[in-house]
Length: 358
View 1 (tube, one colour):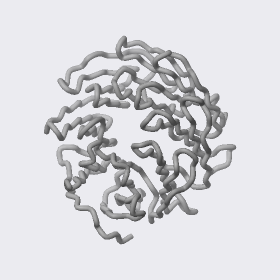
View 2: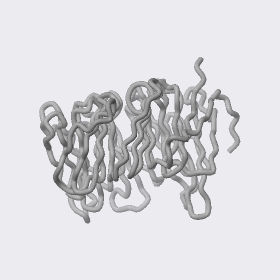
View 3: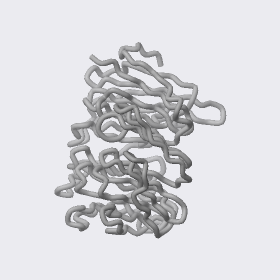
């Protein structure tokens, strides 16, 4: 796909970061986390400083706002570090090895999932506040709302069941205030930036292979705003910063060779725009001003590895930039000030795209 480069960008390779699994901007400004099972690096581009943590990790999570890093390790250990000083604050013990962890925006809560379910831990007192049972081979999907009012966790009723329950837990009252019955395997849980909507995407609803479904709920009332169904696989979903638009990346075609990005009205599911790609969508993000959608599209096989980053202007309804790579990366992320877009992951080098200041 030939695209005229209409954005003035500088592209850098971050040599100090080697083959991360995860690369993403967090918090206000330009704080970047790059992590792998053995090494986590945190870089602050505004202060030109970095902190490195070399551990054997099963999972990791970060809150830039509270300078909190959590490293999950074997034996049920979770180590909590202050990233401003690099010093360890505390060690949480107990339970099975955490396979997936997240920290709330303000750093008050941590969620950890393993084969026994998902535990919600209050970091201010270092104790489990609530446990959501269930898991088995499928480690739970969960998410904190950005305003730190809610925590949502998806629980599968049994290994053989297609039925899931999504619990919406009120962090202030310490109660489950909503339960949503979901059919199919949950692939993503996501609160909108304003905390008013909860998105749940699933695969194989009703036991029908290759079908996918997206549900959007109002967090205050529990009302389902709409469902969106497709015979394409939903790969990634992101909200616009103002919570009014959903970008959905799907895989299409008999051999899943093509990608489609759709822009939906987040209030009613109406399709506002779409664009097609030659390869499957891998990851999506939106710029903080809500004008650009960045898409990683690529191929990963024993015969070929490649990735392309496309930047789509939603106001002009066209792709305005692409970056080709002979490596395969699976993540991209805008800094909250809109200065950078970072791409990398899955053992690739890390590319930093810097936008020219107007």
